[in-house]
Image (cartoon, rainbow, N blue to C red; front, side, top):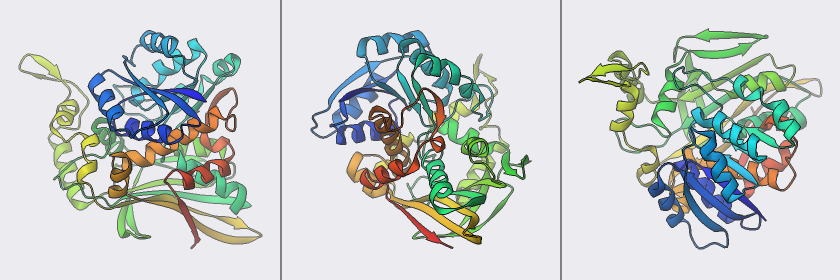
Length: 394
């Protein structure tokens, strides 16, 4: 029986809280913390009757001292960080100071530079190791489950892996002309950045969304997929030896891309402050205020997601192409936890990672990405807690 502090009060936090309460034998108590107490209370009030004790708290996650104070009061066994990526380092600092294990779902990035790198967090490894505590990085779906899929294939399906293509399709329809399925600022910074991929030991860069091709998804059917950069490529290139090519692909509708191009052309996706009526505003922040709150999309989103990995390599001396993936239904997710599938596919793995840490299954001092740990135990939990996986030989 353990206590978990959940920092953040968006759609992913809602899923994490629900799922922790479905595993009351592990999570005896949770605390949902954010700047916005109303959002914390809303999540608490949506959770069905449970033996897990639920409390809420206000915290400024940008300030390590605020997080330290909350940790000191609540005394959690693990901190589950589902706040903004900008807040990873302050929360890690607080965990280091208080000696509490840490987990997040996305790597740190500076507020003023749209750059996704693990280097800022990997340098904490020795500090966490000396303190005897663990930090688990990127334990959502992508990154997270996709990393585990790759580690599983590397250990159980291949003798050598040569190419990994991580492919993410959201075929959901929320009915709006334009909206993002998770934090608008993070989402648009991610997809408007230069695309990058790893090939034969070298990182290559391409213009944003300039490389694309068709892919026929199970259940969803054919979609156009676009090459973008995602942080799991960096950690997989480091930890899975012998890989020649790593790429990440995501689907976008023509309508979405048209809106995005117009917004880019008029400067609305910029993070550079501009003068407006005597004050500085960031265009992307203003756009975020105009667009629907991603956490509100669940009730109106229909359709499915399909996220997985196409892996090529050698087994028993013969070429092999293997596809491992999950199908998730937006309406089913909303019926269960009042969130759409994008939040669900991120929140469930975060809970599972925290569970494995608390149970001592995934527990070692230092800073780790999920592909460095035993994948099969995680894969088994996915089938139990709502994200069953499938695989096929292509």
